Length: 200
Image: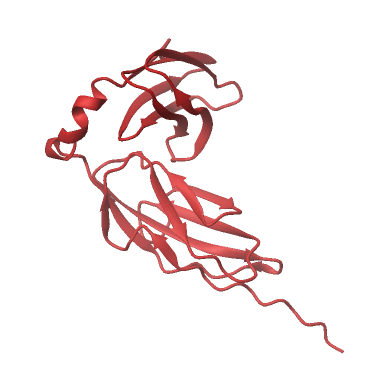
């Protein structure tokens, strides 16, 4: 009697982004439909359709991830496959999207708010910790995340309702490689980005 082998999961179908879409958000969602028999998903983003110039590859249990494009005015390519108990299935068809440089008219509505939501850190460059200071002109739910240049999240520093005024948080980057990181503060409808330079 032959033992029945679990078939490989089918390639997931991408929900977002749409093929050929243009995005300007600093943090974008990559999402796909679940595949029957999948225990995890392996996704890749690259600067070319052959995936020789990968910017990130990661395996996750969920069907949605956050991605921070570090290069503006650039076309990215994204694909995902499902991992089953007997191995990985095939990748889905590659989805390309363009990360545009925001124009002045694209941020006019938000600009007055951004002027009152400020973000800076000191020292910068730093090793191994830095103080991130930010000002809110009104109460709201605030998130603050740090990403590496590949767009992978390395730390969530804030995720709470906060009152207006000056706030500070310390980020200890001990254990991380030297390089450039991006701190993104979000309080709807605004977001601000600060470049953090970790040295060793």
